[in-house]
Image 1 (cartoon, each protein chain N blue to C red):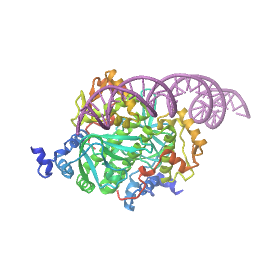
Image 2 (tube, rainbow over the protein chains, first blue to last red):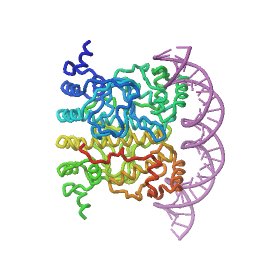
Image 3 (cartoon, rainbow over the protein chains, first blue to last red):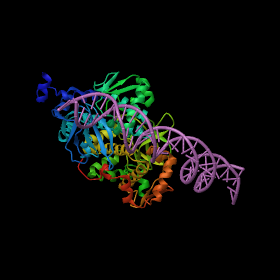
Amino acid sequence: MMTAAAERDPFAGAAPWADRLLMKLRQRDDIDAEEEAALRSIIEPPQAYPARRVIIEEGEPLERSALLVEGLLARFKDMRDGQQQISELHVAGDFADLHSFTLKRLDHGILTLTPCRIGWVGHDALIAMFERFPHLGRLLWFSTNLDAAIHRAWTVSLGRRDAVARLAHLLCELQVRLEIVGLADPTGYPLALTQNDLANCLGLTSVHVNRVLRELRERELVTFRGGHVTIADRAGLCDLAEFSADYLFLEKRPR
Amino acid sequence: MMTAAAERDPFAGAAPWADRLLMKLRQRDDIDAEEEAALRSIIEPPQAYPARRVIIEEGEPLERSALLVEGLLARFKDMRDGQQQISELHVAGDFADLHSFTLKRLDHGILTLTPCRIGWVGHDALIAMFERFPHLGRLLWFSTNLDAAIHRAWTVSLGRRDAVARLAHLLCELQVRLEIVGLADPTGYPLALTQNDLANCLGLTSVHVNRVLRELRERELVTFRGGHVTIADRAGLCDLAEFSADYLFLEKRPR
DNA sequence: CGGCGAATTGACCCGCATCAACTATCGTGG
DNA sequence: CCACGATAGTTGATGCGGGTCAATTCGCCG
């Protein structure tokens, strides 16, 4: 198998583990062949991590960033009383902690929610790349600004949407973000989260998430079961959630 | 008056309207004289805006960013039913929409909460500056990542803190952010917001904000009255809010 | 078949919203 | 100088969305 061989030796081929990242970036701007090669070359071959493992502790000094190649990651914060809040979910093709490039440590932890594969990138390699390709620097800056836009969307959900709309909004967001990297089709997508994970994203309890999921199912909008989201009525779901994909900046523009 | 003259002619002096921005950045990294001059030179003399004016509409194409020189700004989103959610507050020295440099439009509006003075910076001038001073590029990237960290802190508040702790946390955050730019002392700070503005930050109603303010006053932690926050028991307030300034990245480091 | 985490459901409770009335403050014009 | 209107703040009564607690049930794996 070509891909397996390539994964063992980054110089043998095209570092296919960066495919989804490139798919995502090219949705927003053009990347020429030279830039692509530079970007692929600095991402180390992916390492595997089991589910439910903290891979970066809050505050730990960092000299590399994590490109999620496969699986689901969460940025999280644990509270004194044992509650947890997730501030963002990451899907394949996302840098989970690119912001550590400028921050040097994180204000939150990073946790695998499913088994994951992660390709690390050294901050020194990033600096060198940005020097040669400032445009890639701006594109990765864009990526962290996109994360911030997602944070803002979550803030709005948590502040002003009720539980049903909040959950609907999250499922809409994941639908779009997974479509971009080829992991969702219009009917739905795999999502190996527990109801408790969803609760930790939405500022709810798992008990209430369960009831809200039932309501969404009974209203024939979406079904989440057995690790799979099945969208029955996308328009209805978006409307209920007051969802617009504008905040995901899907248009292609020079950045 | 030297300052008044300098404000009329940016080439006459040191563009003092960038002072608080530099104060804030120098808290996190060194900036040499040449970099300082470059940064000051690209910020236009501030323009005045009245309170409660939308200065940037959601979605509008942008070719410049707003440095807040004086006053309070909010990033906001209006909901269908008339509710509003504020996703970040900005104080003097903050860039309110530096992220528009890479995003090209905003996913939210920007609104003055008090009379404001704003110094605009063209995106073309930023590009030119980054080319000569990549370090300043990283520092401003850092600034947008800091905004994202603030977003995450708000997400945690909205998701997992009750109204009392949530309001306490916001007042702690503002205390620190205003101290950095010389607008707060350990006993408190001016804050010309209405209770309704606070409610729109906290995902509450103004009625409940009123009750929570009373509780904080009666517990002798903090008083907010007549546009001024008076902190009676900072340690107690931080403890109640589970507040730690770590997410504001106050340490000085090469970035 | 047994064990264990996740999902499900019901009963009850509480924090915050809602609705409504009233007060305080302040700028404006007669 | 006061009457006023508008906006912000304050307080009480009541209701509801989502939390809490607890008991099953389901699904998967050994």
